[in-house]
Image (cartoon, rainbow, N blue to C red; front, side, top):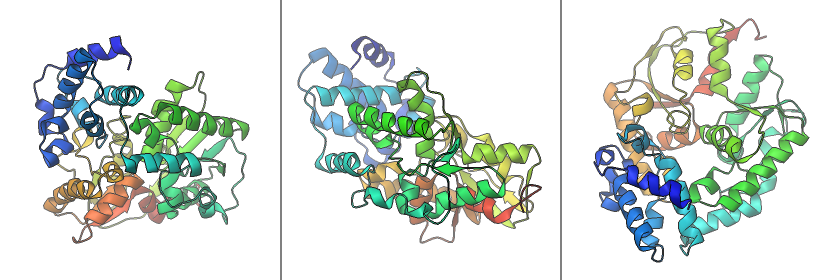
Length: 373
């Protein structure tokens, strides 16, 4: 832990407990140590007494990573940075990870993915018949969710880029973006992964990366430039590329009837402030009625997708509450730009009539432009 910096961060919290009302972990679990303020007070006590790292405190720091507390904090406490540095410090000074998280990180180190059971050689199966060049100045980053769970997602990105005459390649030696390592406080593992990916992309001549995964985009765009000196690769989410074409009149759409709302991904929204591009795309679709959720943009409620790594039941409970917001609006469908959000929202909406759609899929179905053959 960077003692001086984090001491200032810890003192910055005024213990107003405003964060309690918004933290999905606290709302579900109800423990003071699950609230952001409670964790900060516990960290202050730990720093003052310098005792052996409390194992329970370490485990409670593994939260949904939604950043809602950071957005609404009146004192401006940089909670995300604080949680990361605290986890890394507690682990360095005697704390231990749970057996489940250790298994995930060990598998990630071995196979390049946190999804235990999937092997590295399976990562490229989705791209085998697409004839993508392994060397290109613009490359698709498929990510682990796209490579293993939803291979149709990176395929859709490739199809869309081809339709819009954007030449893309794929570097098959990519590994996980490292989000899991960063979240776990595994700085050594994270640095090893980002160096491997960066050197791989530079060797392939890549200077632009396009990804359809909110988590991968957030990690590549937010953390890589802070860790790699003179980082010079431009990171784009598909929604940015597509919205730019919509706003320039290049990309238009066939009509679609029905009412739809939009879920702001935590990693794409609160982490990097990308709120307007998906709305520019959705509202450009003729006939589609767009209805905002009451909790939207920086006030969006987390879907719980990321916390499924440590507690699937908790993830489902959080996700069902987000789905209920859309059901209450009476809309036909829920649109999202993040594959992890899509996975959890789809599962949580399984007993409803709500259609959950990836924005990339919607665009691919409805796109029409002067570039499209």
